[in-house]
Image (cartoon, rainbow, N blue to C red; front, side, top):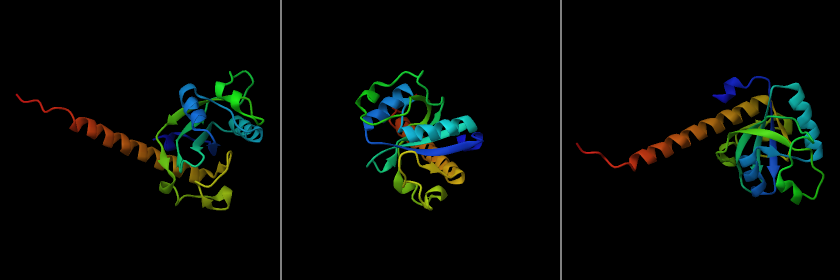
Length: 167
């Protein structure tokens, strides 16, 4: 399980107004954020081994998955095309490695409280909100377990649809 192999980690919420931008990021592994968030993420990336980003599209009532920062924001990283439609100051782009693209509904995480956000449920947070380490690890664990269970159910359904071979 990832939660056991990600020492020295920091966790953040990434919010997006636009589903297409998140889907494109899932394809090309490149993201950009608000300038102030870029500065925080650059510092986190420089000072710890793993920066985990929980992506959520506004009004989706879910996390769409999570990714690990693979590079710090850098002007050397090619800009994703979706950045052309952004009308506010953004950080330089950075690469992410998607670890899960399985949606995780907020109701499944409502019991987790983020000490870094006045002990509000972890699902409450603006773009760039840091999640306290214990809460972040628990969210990661629960998202992993949910994804594994979902994969098992889907595999069982596929197996049930196979014709029975008769000798």
